[in-house]
Length: 548
Image (tube, helix red, strand yellow):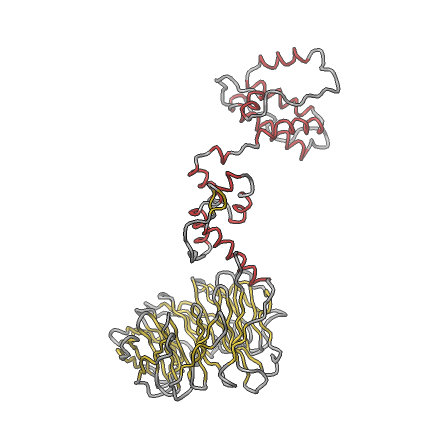
């Protein structure tokens, strides 16, 4: 055991005495009073003294002395005797000395010794090792470490270090990864760190920031907004007034109105500058959002196109005619027709390999679109299937029978039946084995589909007062809307109510929130009423931050 090890042992013994003291009988605590000499590593080298250590730390060989009393006449002899002892003997003597001291005397020794442990070990390490050590810190601790000294700040601005922190949090690459802005000569600012700080502030804005007045996008007169898409800075609303409208999420202006359907629009999908819409006029239309041009009209269904799912250049549509059709968006050609349901197809999912459909015949079907083959018919629901989620491994179906079922897509077996809701499960979202379901019973539930366990039920005094109409979640929050005219924010992990994001004055008397779509920084809500109490419009709430 070297000098530093001895010093630490003495320090910890003194600290224990200050914290715990001796027991009431004045005895030492139970257990070995001292380390046995056999347990000590022989001290073979010339010991480094405390004075040498102070010099090494740049504090000089002298320390503050107690000058109020003259030194005892035999102190030097006592010190010489101490120096003649072996290392284990010195430890035994120090143990006894500490036990004989009063707390004020122990405190004095600690004030002398403790500063020697306050060494900047990070600055002594090679930069690569120092960064490796710092990589174990939480981002908040890393920000605090940057305030320690200039060298630590340079290390804590390392761009690769912050890139890993961002990836752990799922923060995407900054849009402007240009040459780093120089704060001063030799010191540059990490764009990844800026991205992390920005995301933290956005998160704070969602949770408790001032709710700025939303942009109000008025359109579709008094009709119902039946579908809503939000991608980049473009919002697309579809309505039973036969039209779709393209809006700027930045300015709130209506950029163009897509006219061409002869019946209400009931489904839509959007990717980049392409919109696909399905209507009661039995057609799908492919639109260019930049020009407003109808690129293709897809004919084939014999009843309302009620649902669709876009993947790559293919879109799969489901209709009240009980069939599904696979279309090439670029050519407008119908490539496949999937027949097997005996009632209206209400929901569909497509991952590029398998098509999954749910229908009013109580069935869920898994299809191979290349061969037009039904691979599995998933039987178990006892009423209409209204909602689906599919992650390539699991199929999750929600039904009017109040249950949610989790199926294995390869075997077709029902893995779990999720019970607890009291009515129709009309909306669900599935990410990383976490399922969030919204129900007409006014509650929202969070599930682990691997175990079938209900993790949280979003209810309590702040719960919705009517059917949940739409929901969306990320790794922190769940956003829900309802027929009660509110949009609520919940904590995904705890299930706790955070706050109301939207509260319509007409809520409870006819005002409803039909649809919501959220990005990292914006929330779009489609609101209105069926009795004229609330004007049909879109509300756009902004939670972004200015990093200038």
